Amino acid sequence: MLDKFCLVDLPDKDRLIGSAILSEKSNIILSDEVIYLFLGASYSILFTDYLHPDCVEEFMHHMAEAGEEPVTFTAGLKHYDGVYFDVSIVMKTKYIADTKYINIDLFDIGYMSREYTSFAVGDRMIKKMVELSGERFFYYYPETGQIYIYQCGKTLFKGSMELYRATRLEQGCIEDSSMEQFRQMCDAIESANGDGFFKLNTTFCNKDGDDTFRSTAVRFATIEFNSQVLYVSGFLTLGESVSGKTAYESVRTDLDPLTGMLNKGAIKEYAMKALQKAKIKGTLATFVMIDLDNFKTINDTFGHMFGDTTLVNVARIITDAVGERGVAGRVGGDEFFIVLEGFEDGDPAIRPLLRSIRSHIEWYFKQRISTVKVTCTVGTATFPLDADNYDDLFKLADHCLYVGKALGRNRFIIYTADRLGSVEDILNSNTVVQMSSYVSEAEKYEHLREVIQRFNENVSNSDRLRETLDTVMREIMDCYDVDAVQYISADGRYIQKADYDIDEPTRVLELYDTYKDRIEPSGYISIGNYENSKFVMPELVSYMVKYKLFSMFITEHRALDGKFLGIFVYTTHNRYQVWSSFDTRMLLTMSKIMEVAVTDF
Image 1 (cartoon, rainbow, N blue to C red):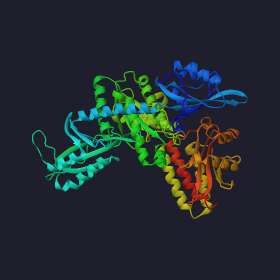
Image 2: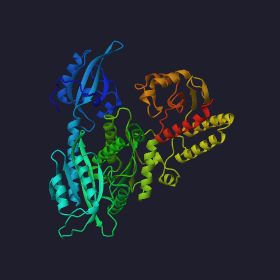
Image 3: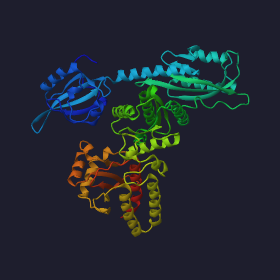
Image 4: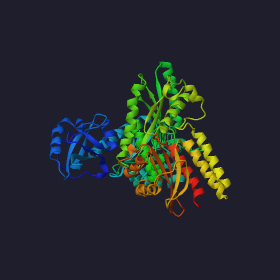
């Protein structure tokens, strides 16, 4: 930790942890949620309780002397895992109704050393694992131009890339048909610009003198830290002899090529063996399903390359958290599967691990993405307490995952019969989970298909089209557990509504216009609990409070040329409603379909 306090320049705003308003006694009066997540604390706490003891006296001194001009200093702040982080605190006075408060902004200034330490530790572990694997592997360092090739701890080649090229060609190690591929591979490695995969016919003389040409797969990746290239690393894997045999097609068939985790087939095989071992030893084994929330928005907003980076970082967080207590794999786009072993206390012992994964993912991306909230939802079930075979245990864990999605995401659900129903009921159901309105996903998909068919049948008859729209709006109320559905055109007049009239429709349009920049490119506003949104969209929340609307979901309607035509508004009037990611997608799709019926009215 940095010694005491020192005045420093204003820190990089990209490293802002969050802001809070304190009383003169250091009670947190208002705070960004991320600060509570950072501290691992509930509401109404003393900020000084989380400062390093050596920093408290100086902090209180600065509070007493605080004025309108900001003062910046550093301190140690206790993270939820018990470690003190170096933070920069920007403090100034704020008066609310003639009462003095202290406004603080917290900036993370120790992130680079922590990230490099984490990177270095992970890097050493990976290198050791590769060495033990028996594979031929190499490192190329652009700064020195040196390439090193190893196998089982022995150095097969050490020298410049130029010497490597010349040696391989002079020794006749590259078959004529692969000369161009070899040159391209060397150029790509030297460029240190991204990842690569090449297949060529080459030979490495082994201890028996076998110099047979073999199909060789060369896969490599560029390793960076803080946007600086450190080295290029890769595998050279020899396959079958090329004399009439099929070339070797892959490097490690059991690994996910993006994250380096076990792939779907490998983690399933591991899980089944883990259950067998647990059965023999009479121990517990827990299946953990993890799914990222809003991952589609990440891809749509920042592109698939950033999405891939997100998955790699999530995989690292999961792997670090699991450690030697289990094995993790990637089973789908943004889905991960963990097999935990050795938790003899079951539920109580697993909770801290799940909480750590959930919090670390949210915290990591909160610091890097301000426009999209990246969180995860987790479901678990344990052998033999909940089920005694792979298929049933997997389905129970998956069921818990989707229950968590239905309840609002960003949480973990551990299976218990009293909360989620009997194992028999869940395993005999036709769907994985029932949503809040007790309409299954399968039934909602079927309803969507029926709606599309009805609109297609009546698209040429405006009267029937409007009747269909009215019917569909009422069906949506039942299917998605909302109290009212309205469409408001851009000029503020009603086009269609189901049940309740919305108050001040032009005001809703004004509020939409005020906050529309915050919904791009998603095209919707979702407020499940206005208490969580009052600092982000205060005017819209004030409107909801005034007219006793508990939850609101708004989608926009635009013409093909981009012209704004109106909004669909879904509301609840006596309860909070947090829409799952599935329901969000379905409501967006329903809104698009209903646009056909309102465009010409």
